[in-house]
Image 1 (cartoon, rainbow, N blue to C red):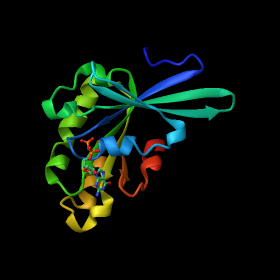
Image 2: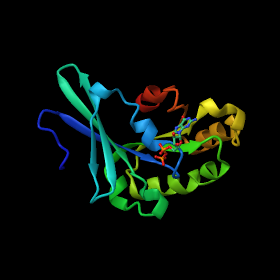
Image 3: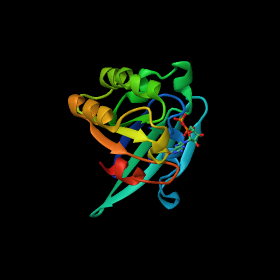
Image 4: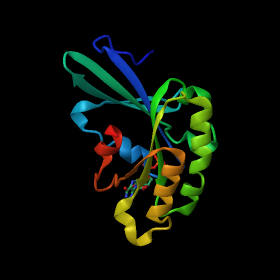
Length: 167
Ligand code: GDP
């Protein structure tokens, strides 16, 4: 609750997850600067971005969590997932291995996260279509089988990043 803001009526947590290098930090940095701030908690190894959403007279705050590289050391703990209402599970279309491991991340999400967490499978680096190693249909098929939302983004070109969040 250290990040709770008294002026907000609702707070919800969204986690970013996926292999190292898929573009999570770049995705989080794409949220409009006037609507988010980045906090870094080195002690926890977690990075947050906040996004305020006004619905009628209520202020809703999305707290987006990034692993800050901890996935490299397989050091993501269950507290990272705890209480998350949404997750963006990211892979890189130019690296097959990042897609192969998506199932493993999904398993963790389901084990430690809430039952009805909304998961968006984010296929990042869509600008690098010429170096693609994962067919679009594969990603889409996996998302459909697992009941996930599916989104293609380019953090580099700032394509669909906002849409992925709102899904
Ligand atoms: P993380 O380890 O998942 O947080 O990944 P980063 O955000 O650090 O990105 C890893 C590398 O991929 C960096 O060199 C980024 O510049 C690059 N990158 C991230 N997103 C994109 C993208 O959409 N397109 C391209 N071409 N490169 C990207």
